[in-house]
Amino acid sequence: MVKILALISVFLIVGNTISFGQVRTVTQLELRINIPQKRVCAGEHLEIDIKLTNKGKKPVVIDTGSIGYVTTFTWTAESSDRLESGMLSSIADQGPYYKPSFIILRHGETYQKTGIVVLDNAIFGSARVFRMTITYGQFRKFVFESIPVWRGTVDSNKVPLTIEKCSG
Image 1 (cartoon, rainbow, N blue to C red):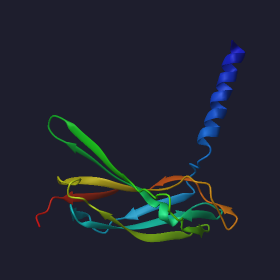
Image 2: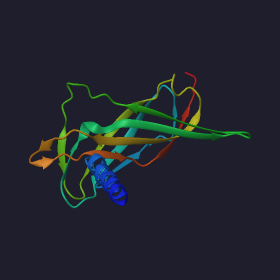
Image 3: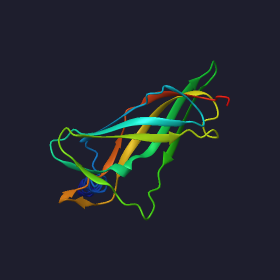
C-alpha cells in the first residue's frame, strides 16, 4: 500500500511538471501599461501606452502581435447591503492567417507601443471605476533566428479607470 501511494505521489508530481512545465511561468518578462486619460466616456476610444521589458539575463523572442491578446476590466462596488463585483474580458482571435511579428529583446530592452481599446456603449453602459489589465500570451512553439520564442502568459499592472455614460 505504501509503495502504491508513493508511486501515485511521484506520478502526480511528475505529471504536474510535465503538463504545467511546458509553458513558462517565470517572470522573465514584465508588462506595464499606462492610461493617460483617467476618465473616459463609454463609446470612445481609449489609448494605452504599453511596455514589455525583458528582465531576464538571456535574449528572448516575443511576438509583438500577441501583446494585449486579452484585455480585462474588473470592478467592485459596495452598497449598504451588498458587495457587487464583476469582470469583462476580451480575447483577440488571431485566426488561421495570422502572421507573427517576432522581435528579439535583449537583457533590459523594452518594446513599446500604443494600443487602442474601443469602449462599447452596450458593454460599458453604467458609470463605474474599473481596474484594467492586458495580457501578453504565446502558446505555439516557434523558433526565430535560432532562439525559441518565449511561451507563456504575462499580465500587466492593474490601472484604475473611470468609464462614464456621457451624453452626446
